Amino acid sequence: MIVTLEEKLREYLSARGLKLAAAESCTGGLVSDRITNISGSSEYFMGGVVSYSNEAKANLLGVAWDTLNVYGAVSEATVREMARGARKIFDADIAVSVSGIAGPGGGTPEKPVGYTWFGLSTKDGEWARHFIWDGDRIKNKQLSSEAALQFIIDYLEGKLE
Image 1 (tube, one colour):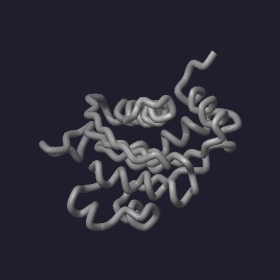
Image 2: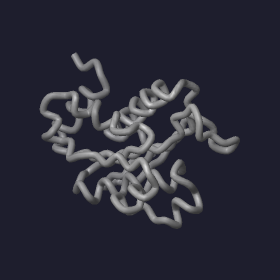
Image 3: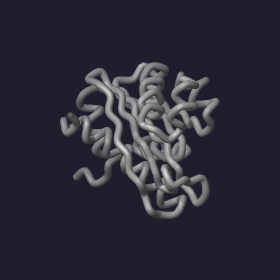
Image 4: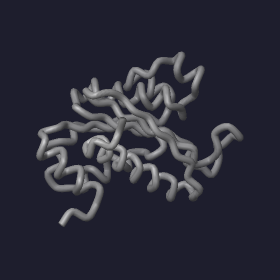
């Protein structure tokens, strides 16, 4: 019986022969950690980048400095470029990205603590979604990792338009 999102991912990706990559900021590698907690994940998980700084987003993932300067690190435009970059560098079929304000500091009225964007890049298109979590730093990271995994599953289940 499949009980976790990580196990669901394994089933879907293995059955379809798809390769996955991740680009993470506020989660600090938690999404990749959860994926690799599953034995055999090396068959479908190509790798992840923890691009915590803007320099890493630009230099490793190819996020445009114009995007970072105009929209900020926590934005729809940035997570789309992060996911696109991860998909390219890992030659993956699917890439997920996450960038947010985990807290307790760093929030603004426009982008409060917990404000988080997710990106998904696939051969079928790109999507983004965002949430505002209301937990502490650790809880926000956990919720973000859960949402990132669910985003991939939603795509694999045909739930994205």
